[in-house]
Every structure is written in structure tokens, then in C-alpha cells.
Picture (cartoon, rainbow, N blue to C red):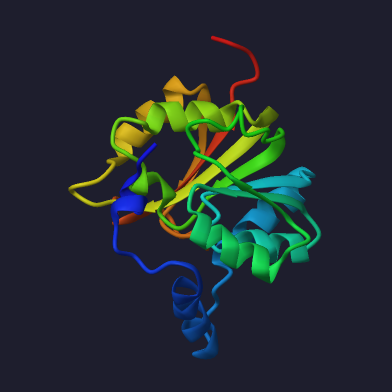
Length: 199
């Protein structure tokens, strides 16, 4: 399935990683997503993570280094090639997020969507993608998604509707990965929990 990411001119592979290396070299924390996910995992006793739309593996590799069982999945072969080169020991799957069952993605305790994954989906596929992701969660599992709020992309209201349709219940919401309160800003990090039983 085509996505906005595939149609974009955004840098791929090593070129994509160069931006994060530059930020790291400048002394910035490039692991805010991993910091938050680790905190949530430790608080709840969860151990397994799916990095959905993992790209070159920045978040997945960091979480694995912190002791979690991590699988990375992405539809972009060039991005995954960079991830595999950096951490060949991890489990990387090339798959469309709208079709994870046939790709053999196992169930996990938590799914993270970092790097604006949700707004790079093909418009109209959000419910399908979130439903596929929800189907990869263990009972009571969490889905954490962070993305920019832009006038021409997925709105927060549309995201919440898609999550509800996928059987996900809202838990909390922040304006950043370091848990700043959300007050109608231009970035959001939302946590949803898998409904324990069918509606």
C-alpha cells in the first residue's frame, strides 16, 4: 500500500540518520521516545515492544540496549537496511502496517509509533492500521503514538476516532515525549490501551 512517506522526498537510510547524529553531537537528547517508553514499561512490568514504522531503528535499538524484547517493522526497505546494518541481531520485518497479521508479527505488550508515522499513512487507512496494530497487542497492551498536528494532515479528532474504532481506549496525552502537559499545541503523544473485551 502506498503511503505519504513513500511519496515524500524525505532523506532515507544513512542520510536520515545523519540528522540524528548531528543533534546528538550537539549535545541534544535523541532518545526522548525511548526514555518515555522505558518509563512506561518499567512502571507496568511490560517487557516486549513493537516499534511500528521503525525507520532506521533509532528507537528500537535504544530500547533493546535497555533490556527490552524489541521488534521493528517498516515498509521502507532502504530504512530497514540501515537498521539491520546497525543491529543485525534484532528482529526487523519489512511489512505494511495495514497488513501485520500476514507478516507474522507477534503480539507484544506495547507498540510505539514515533517519528510522525501516523501522518505519513495514506489518508483513509488510519482505522485499518490502528486495527492491525491493536491486533498485535496482548490483553491490556498499550499503544503510544507521537505526531505533529498539521492543518493538512491527520487531526487529533480523527486520530481519536480511529483509535476508538480499533478498540483502543484513551489513557493519557502529552505535548511531548518528556510528558509536558498537552494544551492544544502542534505536537501530541497519545497513550491508548487495548480494550480487554470486545464491545
